[in-house]
Amino acid sequence: MTESFIPYGHQLIGEDDIQAVVEVLRSPYLTTGPKVEAFEKAVCEYVRSPYGVAVSSGTAALHAAMAAARFAPGDEILIPTMSFLATANAALYVGAKPVFVDSEKHGFNLDLTDAEKKITSRTKGIVPVHFSGQPVNIEAVQALAKRHSLTVIEDAAHALGAVSNGRPIGGLSDMTIFSFHPVKHITTGEGGMVMTSNEALAKRLRQFRHHGIDVDVIQRDTQQRWRYDMTGLGYNYRLTDIQCALGISQLRKSEEFLKRREAIAAAYDKAFTHAPFLERPPRGRTSDRHAWHLYIVRLKAETSGLSRDEAFEHLRSQGIGVHVHYRPIHLHPYYAALGWRPGDCPQAEATFSAALTLPIHPSMTDAMVQRVITAVERLPDALIVKNPVS
Ligand SMILES: *Cc1c(COP(=O)(O)O)cnc(C)c1O
Image (cartoon, rainbow, N blue to C red; front, side):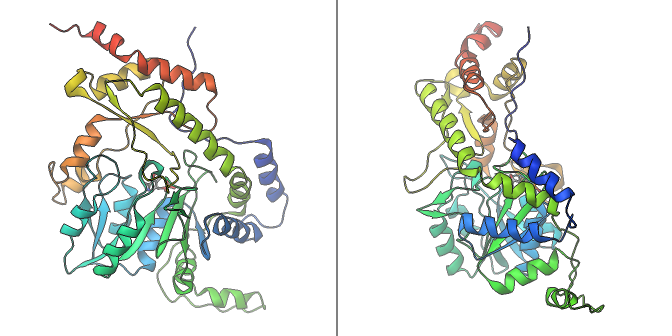
């Protein structure tokens, strides 16, 4: 008998979500209708942000934010190399240059000392990523940004529901982006949103997602006018009403989802307290709330002889959908061709080579969590039998 595969992340869709989508399919608006604004309003209330602009993906949200910030060719943007590559690609979309920042010594978030060292007269922005859902010290980022006149765009694709020093992530910086991909906290299939407290930025973002067409004129259009003006270059980055209805329904369960993620993280923490061959993920400040998008352990290969790659293969063979988040962006061939080299961000490279993501998502049962724990606990026996020490 083979046990089912446990993926590292998975959506949780209920009958209520299905009903919400079906309702839109029976309504007059499949896109650019009332569900879009309703979803934006719901996310704004949840994260306490004045404006939210829904777009077709988290990547589109990053692109829109970089364009709204007016990043342009010649500008340098500080990007943690320990992120999903979309964070850096978005800077390239607007012609700016990503400058990769190393990770903190004992964690996955960006090292602000390294960020400050890499600032030049061309640096215009910084994109902190709340890696795995652990809040970045945003006050420190903002102090740095203020000293050097940088725009802050938070990549909170891992951090919907997270709290930084008592304040929800989403309303803290110039702009913050979320992703609603199925592995993230809530899903719209594909989708994203840019949050801002700046009305002018919100207007630019709305225009950018709709071909660069002046949105005020669109509003006048409802008064039966045919004319509209395109005043900038934009894209079709709209999110449909079908997706927004799913998002509204999912968001109602966000707290429940987050509590389940916290419970799973707590079970792993407890089980691995005395596992000498791994290091548990950092917890952060007590004034923070971790959103536990990912639970990443680091294998201590030097002391235990257990390598990440062997652990990965063994756990996969047991049906445990472990993963690696992520290969540092600067190590990808595309970025190597732009001049980045191994050794440019040594801490992130070391963290990457030891990192192993264990499954964590609200559709995991207690039995699934226990299966992961047992398989991880048995790693030393399983691997030492395979490679006897000579
Ligand atoms: C998922 C993710 C994105 C991109 O979001 P999509 O909705 O998949 O386009 C960007 N940054 C980070 C850190 C992510 O994890």
